Image 1: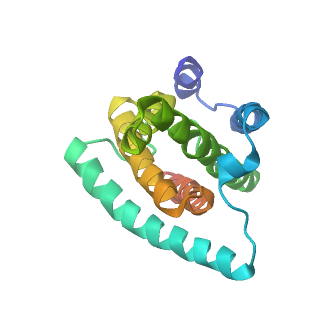
Image 2 (image 1 turned 90 degrees about the vertical axis):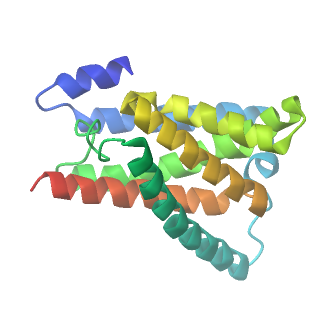
Length: 198
């Protein structure tokens, strides 16, 4: 949050080092989680066929559309500022930054879903003795991790995290969530960056 505050105040913040530092941190955090838990536990069953891959892509696409509609409704209900209002400092401005933004979005999709939904959600659910509690607690942690976007967006992202938690619980895998998360971050960041550049 402190780093975001400094970058937000800068005239032309250094986005590429920010992307690199964020990606490295997320992969290191995932490595730490993977060190303590098996990949099967964190990710769910392996893709054993092309049909399963296509099914997860289809589930991710459906989830992305439905959750996007729900997110827009919740954003209006919470009177949250437009996406990008607090994130102008990190949205891509050049072609290279756009490519790196997509790489960062894929990193966020893989790492955040594995950490929050693949590892933290079942752990917290086991501690609380309740799968719904695990979904709610991991969603709250997810929102808190995004507090640099402002309080209303932190609440909105926690609710979005709850949607991803329900998806992971239903599918018994975080792979569809990873795909949808990467799509959402990539698409939203690039579109908002384009629109705010005029």
